[in-house]
Structure formats: structure tokens, C-alpha cells
Length: 246
Ligand SMILES: NC(=O)c1ccc[n+]([C@@H]2O[C@H](COP(=O)([O-])OP(=O)(O)OC[C@H]3O[C@@H](n4cnc5c(N)ncnc54)[C@H](O)[C@@H]3O)[C@@H](O)[C@H]2O)c1
View 1 (cartoon, helix red, strand yellow):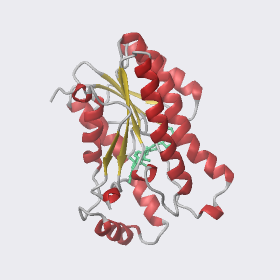
View 2: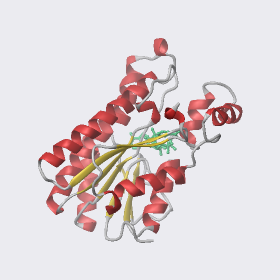
View 3: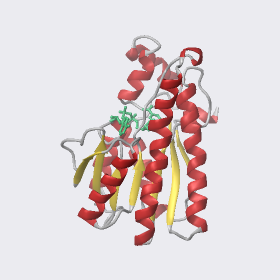
């Protein structure tokens, strides 16, 4: 239970379903976890809790100062904060489109840029970007979200190549979960009717016959964050019960 021993890991969106599961697992694997969300997450196993709106450049600067003041280093960043919009493309406003881009894509860009600045000073690190199966295949009612997550997939590869070229020792990978049992999935499914019924139908459509649990996503993030994945960069780890294999 020490796969992240000695590492400091910053997780964004840590009050959400997947973020909470990652905070618990990373801490159990001996990381010092900095949990962050719009409001500082309460409870849980984090060594430090911070308010960090990922869309705000000044929040990132303040958060990184707090991490370096407290621990002197950052080894792992998980860009996990995310926001979905289930809406017809024709009804999506420009403001809604921009908000989805801001949280899912601008947030990961700002986080990655900030983390690179800190990680390169201490010999490297690992950045894990929470994309989605929606970043690999399209979905008629998730156009803005899909575009943002698809953008994040290729941003990840570009950032990985950038860091490799400069010998920073920083690996950058994307993680692509399928439908996962969290508040976000409740929001998405509510747009199609009763969330429980829609989720049951969705589960039957997955080759494994069920939805993912946040803990399963956390285990994949742990692998990418740990030194078990030292030859992995610019890669996309798909964790979708077979959804995109069809
Ligand atoms: N649940 C799924 O089916 C699923 C599938 C694939 C990918 N994902 C991705 O996994 C990640 C985690 O999602 P989740 O399912 O745990 O969702 P969630 O809604 O439970 O958690 C998302 C968290 O992000 C936070 N957040 C939103 N805007 C923010 C901002 N501007 N700054 C900081 N934090 C902000 C929210 O407060 C929330 O705590 C997201 O990036 C999501 O897109 C989820």
C-alpha cells in the first residue's frame, strides 16, 4: 500500500465522485494528497484542502504557492475537475459552450502549465488528464462536452511530447472512463428521463453489462500517476467496459 510513497499529488474536482475515490486511494497508497474543488473539500484523507477554480489563472498560482510552501514539491497532478452539458446542439448557447470549454479544457491547460513549472524543478512528475469516452467518440446530446474532452485528448499528447523533448521527466497521459456512477452521470441521465431508469438502460448497453464505479477509475489513475507507468506518456488509457470496442 505504498505505490505513491513520497509523492505529493494535487487533485482537482476532489469533492466529486471520482475525485473523492482518487483522494482516498492515493492517500491509502501513501501519497500526500492536496484535494481541491470550487470550495475546499471537507473530510476525507487529504493532507491539505484548497479552494481552486480551475478556470482561474490566479487560483492556480495561489494553489501552487500553497503546495510548494507546505511540501516543497509537486509530483502528481490529476486534472479531474469537469462539467457536462446534456443539450441539443441547436439549443446550446455560446455562453454554455464556453463554460464547458473553460472547465474541461482551459482548466487542464492552466493546470498542466502550472504543474510543469513546478515539476521540472524537482526532476519530473506525472500529469493525468480526465478525458472520457466522449473524447473518443461523439454523442448527439453532448457536443460541447465531447469537443472539450476530445481537445483534452490531443492537448495531452502535445504536452507529453513537449515535456519529453525538453527532458523534463514529466509524463502526461489521458484517462478515458466510460459511464461512471457519480453525480455527473445523474445530471447527464436526467436529461433523458428518470435517472435511475435511464442509468439501468445505459448499463445494459455496456458490453460488461454495468456502469463503472468511481473506485475503478481511481485505480487506473493510480497506475498512471505511479512509477509503474514510467514508460507511458502521451497515451490514452480507456476504461469503458468495452463501450468503444464495439
Ligand atoms: N461520471 C462519468 O460518467 C464520467 C465519465 C467520463 C469522464 N468523466 C470525467 O471525470 C471527471 C470527474 O467527474 P465525476 O464523475 O466525478 O463528476 P462530479 O460531478 O461528481 O465531480 C466533478 C467535480 O468537479 C468540480 N468542478 C466543476 N467545475 C469546477 C471548477 N471550475 N473548478 C474546480 N472544480 C470544479 C465540481 O464541483 C465537482 O466536485 C470529470 O472530468 C468528468 O468529465 C466522468
